[in-house]
Image (cartoon, rainbow, N blue to C red; front, side, top):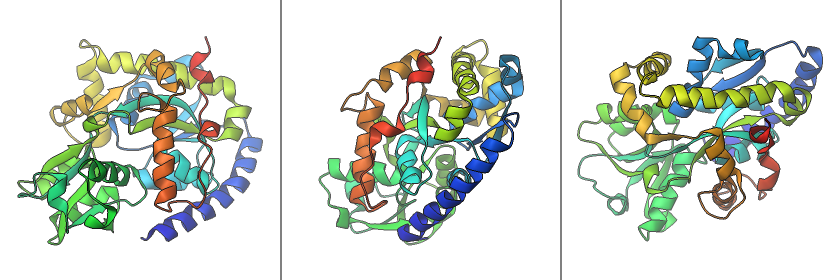
Length: 330
């Protein structure tokens, strides 16, 4: 799928969203909040709250719907969801297509789980010069790859970008003409198995804060059901505590691994590559700044990347996508 088709698809989905959102929000406030989530540790952590019944205890009716990542954004753009768990940069992509959202909670930042995986014999980003690298164009691994290339003093034309779905990267890496792929865990683990001897040559741990993961909410849903969204946000600290506490972590990992379809032993190492943020840590990242310690600074970098690479035609107003106020409510 080429980039222009991605943009057209998002725009078409956004047009549907305008109609669908108006209908769904007006139809029944008693309907559950619908949140799309996918296979990333910072989002799978919500499975703990789901399985433990914490939303019901908090008095909020929430329905989490499981997708492949790209499909979750498509569903949001089509107005089928009230919110979606995305990266900060991808909120701009869906928003530029017309499906605006507001980042109300930072769940985590990637600290090693986003990886450029290369075949045997390739030991650095510089070794990719003149070769083909597969990423999902316009999404986070594309940004990670470009930043890695810039650090290595490479130009955009030094490699050939091949567009592919992130969940297909294990098969793509196994193909003969692809030297490396960009993916996130647990897909990275599958890619490493698909190409024996492959290894990570650059990860998000090299640039902590480049990729924040967020709960992005439809502005109309946020306005109409703010009290419920505050309850959702407040539960996040309970989730983080359960995942991080040595006494409860084994149970949390068991729950998360089951959702991802892997063993607990396979899943446990993935927690190290995802820095879950408490609400207090998230409040600090919400403070406006120009570097990766700030969600604003990180998102501005993503905006510049997206605009420069023609992911969307106009630079986005980053401030309009960020609302820390729900994390500040007592």
